[in-house]
Length: 277
Image (cartoon, rainbow, N blue to C red):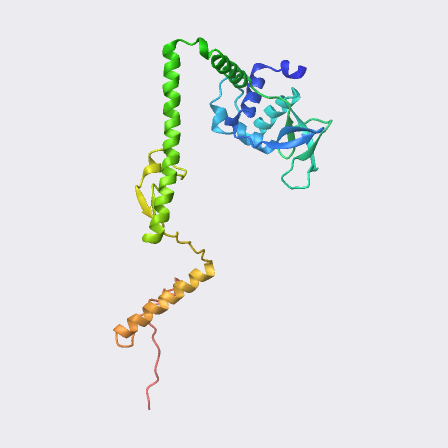
C-alpha cells in the first residue's frame, strides 16, 4: 500500500517487530473477501509492546504503559499496516474453520477489537531461500561439469548416508524379531534399544541397551474428597494402633483455641462479718 511507504522508519520497525515471530503475537487466520488473512486482537499487541523483547529492539519508540502502547499502535494503524475488522461466524461447518472478517470503515485502536494484517513484514528470508534453491538446482544440473574430486566426494557422502539409513532399518527389523522370540521364550519380552523411536537425542536413543517390556502403571487421579477420607482413615488407624500398643488407651493431641482470656483481678476483698451474740 502507498500509505505504508510513507511511514516513518521507527513506525515501520514497530510493524516489523509485531509481524515477526519474536513478538509473541497470537496470530489467527480468518477469511476476508474469500482470501485467508492473518489477524490478531488489540490486547495481544499491547502485551507484545510491553514485553522484554520489544525493549531490546533499537530505533523504536519507548513504551512503558498500556496507554503509550495503545497510542503507538494507533499510529501504526494510521499507515494501514493492519486494519480494524469485524469478526463474524465460521466460514465452514467445523468450529476450527476460519471466521469471516469484514473491514470497518471507522479505523481506531482498541484492546478489545480485531485487526487484520495487510503487511507481510521483512521478506529477506524468503528471497534468501529462493536464491538458495536456485543455486542448489543449478549445482545439481551442472553435476557432470564438476571436478572429479568433488564428484568422488559426493559419491562417498551419498553412499555413507544410504549406509546409515540401511543400518537403521536393519536394527529396527532385528530388534522386532528378537522381541517376538523373547515374548515366546521369556515373557513379557525384551526390547533392544527401547528408546530407538522415542523423542530423544541421538545418543539417548541407544540408552539403555535393553529393557523388559513391562506395562506402565497408570496414575489414578484422586479427588479432594478421597484424599480427605484417606487422611481420616490413616488417623483412625494410627489411633487404633496406639490404643492396642498402650493397652487400650491412646493420647490425642487437641489444638487449643487462641481466645482472649479475661484476667481476674487479684485485689483483696474485705467483708464485715457480724459476731454471733
